[in-house]
Length: 186
Image (cartoon, rainbow, N blue to C red; front, side, top):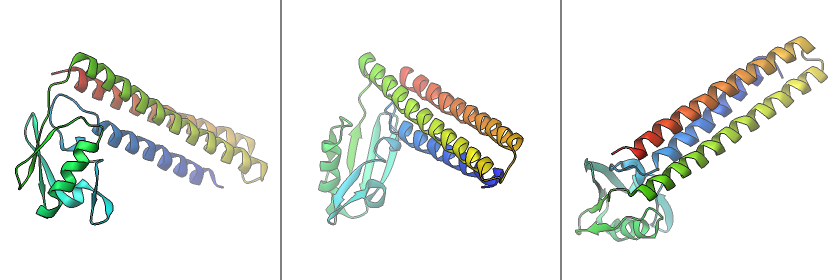
């Protein structure tokens, strides 16, 4: 495998790890209402688990409230059940047309748990990034063994992979710090 191909693959896979981290962090609750809090919710509607975004519009008209307006009023009860069954800890209010979720303020203990969860998610992302580095280094070693590149080219490639690893780990750490600050403020 050519060194450019290995680098491109490593970069792409590390970028995906960051994307997964970003979406996971979006689901972490802060003191403010955010439609991202219910994005990961799946609703049993029409006989299969369906993402809530496909069933309803989700908005945060106020800093402490999320409003879910189903496209089909028949799914209102299913959406309400999914919210209650989720681990989000929300108490939805159904008025027959839409669902309102009031976001209670976070206690210090809950904020600490959220920060702990952020740290866990970030560590998972860093592990994923390091696994990609390991795979890239193996590909570099294999290419050198197969006489597709010289020893110097392999070492250069490993150096580039390490630079990418540092870059993406720093990005994961920055995302985590920003989210921790959001959770601890308010």
